[in-house]
Every structure is written in structure tokens, then in C-alpha cells.
Amino acid sequence: MENPKKKKVIWIDHNIDNDENKYTYEEFTNSLPEFDIIKCKSVKETFDFIEKNYEDFKFKLFYVIVSGTLSEEFFNEYVKKTLEIHILCATIIYCSEKHRKMNEFKPFYLDNFLNPGKVTDSSFFVIEYIKSIECKYYLDSNELNIKQKKDKEEEENKEKAKNKNDNEFAAEFTYVNDLGTMAYPIIISKYINCTLIEKEEFGALQEEYVKAFPKLKHLFKPS
Image (cartoon, rainbow, N blue to C red; front, side, top):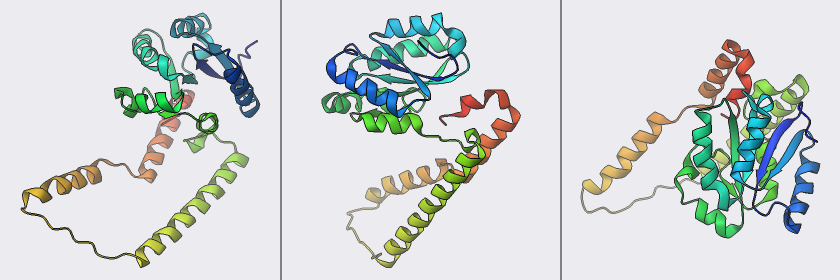
């Protein structure tokens, strides 16, 4: 029985009830006690369930774990449904290593709206992705203190690594036949530098959105 107060995770797989997935389901439920793990065998069953329980999904972020074989069908249907109903999900494709490599060549793989969780063959990575919090404004004070301490440690480790790399830096030269050979990397580097958003700027943008639309803050996660 689903708990309407719990966050939702929908797991879609043709073979959802085979022995391996039964074991993985137990792993998911034990590792994600604050979530309802809803099992579906098809894309149609998934959206039938969402529409039947629409109030539990309307304007609320939920997670979708979809198998590699059903991923393309799911994304095609999801795009259509978002034009009809107000839903937003964070998806991750969970499949075998063989299917993982196949899905990494599909167009939705690099789409941050359709597939922010990308593709994995690890149940551990699925759990870590669902538990991850990308916006600090969802944390209570105790969780925030823990996260800030962790972030500080990560920054210190990055700074140490950077200093180490700076000390070990050495010039590297490459021979080119003409100026045209140099043009592509120069243009690409300038494009990347002008389009990336700084972490602090992104955090400030999220904070402004949360202040302006507090009732919709769940829509700003994942970013």
C-alpha cells in the first residue's frame, strides 16, 4: 500500500518480478525508507498509475528508474504527457552493462531534462542518485550543517589537489602544420568558458527562485 505522504519512486521493467529484481527491490526499499517504491511492468501501466493517483504527483518531483529496453518508449511518452498534465520526474536508466553502453549513444542520454540521472548498471548508484540533494534549501538545520561540513572538506581536498598539480605542472608543446589546426581548440575553449555557469551564481539563482516561489521549490530539484 502506497503512502501518499512519502516521496515516490517508480521502477519500470518488463522483468520487474524476476529473482534478481526482487532482491534489488529489497535493496531499494531498505536503503530508501522515506520513499514509496512503485513497481510497473510497462510504460502504459506507469502513466495509468500516475493519472489514477494524479494528486500524489501533480507539481511534485518524483523519481523514475527505467530499464534500458523501455527507456526510449518512456521518454517519448513522458514528453507527450508533460504537455497534458503537470508532472516532473528525475529519471535514471538502470540496466545491464550491455544496454548501458547502447543507451549512452541515444539522444536523450545528454538531455538534462529527460535523463538527469544518466545510465547505470549499479543499484548502488541508483540509490545514491535518488538520495542526493542538489539544492541546500531542502535541508533542515541539522542536515544543512552536515552538508556544509562535507562541502568544506571537499573544497579543501580540491584545493590540496590543485596545489599539488600546480607544483607538478610542466609545459607541453605540440607541433602543428598551420594556423588552421589551432583554430578549433581555441574556438571550443572560448565557447566553453562563456557558457559555463559558476556554482555560486547557480546557487544564488536557486535561492532567488525559492524566495519568489516558495510553494514550487520542489520544482527546482534536481537542477
